[in-house]
Structure formats: structure tokens, C-alpha cells
Length: 296
Image 1: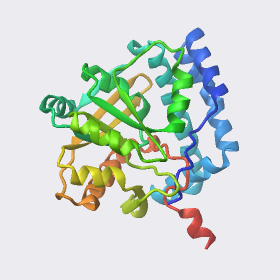
Image 2 (image 1 turned 90 degrees about the vertical axis):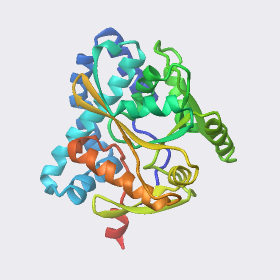
Image 3 (image 1 turned 45 degrees about the vertical axis):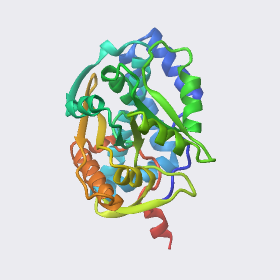
Image 4 (image 1 turned 30 degrees about the vertical axis):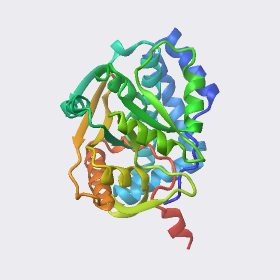
């Protein structure tokens, strides 16, 4: 796997334009603009387009020609999730409907007050998960782990927006001090939410098959989840239609102190989600190292 470079798609200016459109013209008009933006990314986001083509062609088995259309639709759906995120943050949550599948698992974890680990991925609209969590977490018991770069970008974009949540952030730091924050949060019986599908250069990794090919994953969430004797659940927020979202929560069952087995259960859960929502894989880099193999 080629590790993630720490940068997300889009620019601050692009986000500001869409925020303006959402505020002044509404979500539907922003969606119309997406038809052109998605085509732009198809043509000019060379790295992202190549990675998505490999996903649809190599992993899902579509023809090369069909894969180009799939990439365009993937870009469009990704753009919709960004628009939805900002609309919700602007206080337009009532524009959407929501369905909770397995949410009792999260309620039970919060009631047990034993701490726990939630593992998600960059599928669906993970970035609005905090607003789902906030609805069930009135006492600020859920913490989201994020990189410093992501945190700065989020803070800059959100500082003038209206919607707030109870969710706390733990920022990944070079000095590894975030590890102590994680342990302290778990000691305070809080839930820690990780994404388990990206890592930065120099991070320790584990390898497991995803969609029939080995890929690397950050070892941290799976080592912690398997060794700390706290409950673990997989969570995803998936877009089902223009205005409807579906939150999935599934309790993880795995061998005690076996990080590899937990990772295997995680990849199986992602495969099940992608089988139902193939257009909502939003890792725009060479996740499986297919380019490297081709060049060797």
C-alpha cells in the first residue's frame, strides 16, 4: 500500500465557494454544480483518478471503459458528502433524514461506562459521524482521533459555521503524546473513534486482504482494540440517497489479544459495506500498491 500523504481532496477556496452556494442558493444548486466539478476531477486529478480506476477495475472487476464512468460517479457522490457535511454544519440538518442500524450498541457502550473503541473508514460520510454521535452522546463521552493537519483544516473551515457538537478531538502528534491522551480518555470510560484505513509515512502497519488483495493498515487501532480489554465496534455513516443517511454500528467479535484477527474482522466489515455502496470508497491514493507492482 502507498501510504496516505496526509492531504485531503479540495482546497480552502473551493470549500468556501460551496459554503457560499449552500448558504445563498441551497443544497440542490450545489449538487448541480457538482456535475461539472466531478468531471473536472476526473480529468485533472491524475493521482486520484488513477487510484479510483484501479479500485473499480482491479478490485471490483469492471471493464476499463466502465470504470471511467464509475470514477465520475464516485467523484460526484464524494462531492455530495462534502456538501452535506457543510450543510449540516451550517445548521441545515433538517434537510436530511437518518436511519440508525445497530445504534443500540453505541447506547449500551455509553451506558456501561467501561470505555471502548470505535473503528471506521473513509467510506461513506465519516466526517458527519460526529453529529450522529453528538445526538446520542450528551455527556461528551466520544473522542475522535484526527491528524494535526486535518484538525487545522477543520477548525479553519468551521470557525464561522453554526452547528456545534459534543465530540472531543484527540490530535495525533509527532511526539506520540496522543497515546497518553487515548489512555486517559479510556480510563475516563470514553469511547475513542479511529479510522483504520490510513496511515502516514513511518507508521507501523499490519497487512490483511481487502477485496482479494493484501493491503497495509495502521496497526494502532487494532493493537489497542485487541489488548485493552474494552469493547470494539465498527461504525460507518453511508449516504443512501440525495437526502438520506444510514448509520451502521456492529460489535466486533475477535480473538483476545489478536490484532490480526481484529483487522481481519474489520476488512470483512468494509467489504460488506462496499458490496452495498461501491461508489462510497473515498481513498484517493494507490491503496493496494497496484502502481508499484505494474512498474516493477
